[in-house]
Structures are given as C-alpha cells and as structure tokens.
Image (cartoon, rainbow, N blue to C red; front, side, top):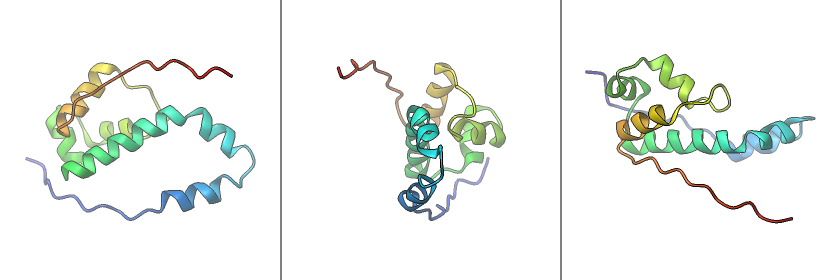
Length: 105
C-alpha cells in the first residue's frame, strides 16, 4: 500500500496570482479557465484534508500517480464524470455537479 503521509507544500497563491496578473494576457487566459482552476483547487483541498498523497489516491483509484497529477492540473484535459466520481470517493468526498443560471447583464 502507498505511503499515506502527506506533507503540504507552502504556497501563497494570492501573491502568485497578483504577480502573474501583471503579465500581458494572463488575466484573460486565467479567467477563461476559471472553472477548471476552481475544480483543481477543490480537488487539491480535498486530497490535503484527507491527508493523502497522489500515490495514495492513485492506488485507491487503481491508476498511476502521473494520472492523478494530470487530473489535478487545471486546463490540461477534461476528466470524465466517472473519473471525477472515483477521485471524490478516493479522497472521502461526494461529487456534486449543478447548473446555475447565468447572471443577466
């Protein structure tokens, strides 16, 4: 069984974004991927809260660490609902998907 000990890496995401948003075109590109980044953030937060490594999640899902790394990388590919359900179960969560009406302009 994979090692279940997880050591979080410190990262000041707000400071990173503030600096990155100064680059031309970054804000538009980042905003276009907002949903993907939100999902990736939620996945990482759930894995961290569960105290699991990518290796441990991979073992629970019957896949590889590199597959989990790709899954957690926002914007690289669009995972299926089946894969997201497996990930959620592996980190002790339930997947919920909902459609929200758009705000009128």
